[in-house]
Length: 71
Image 1: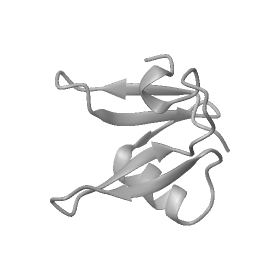
Image 2: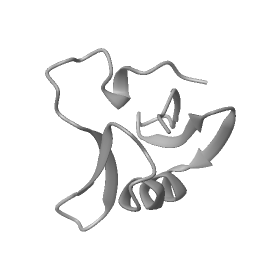
Image 3: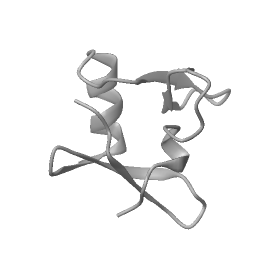
């Protein structure tokens, strides 16, 4: 499965993702990525210990999570 769209809060943080017609909260999406269910993303860890989604590096900016369409 691949993330098609993202929803962001006022600070620009991704809060939800759109996959195959379904909306998932970011925590669910992180679990899905950790379990290998999502293509093109992996789970990173911020300095404060918070986990977040990030796109796999491929040299293309167009498919970075921050550049996906919003909903």
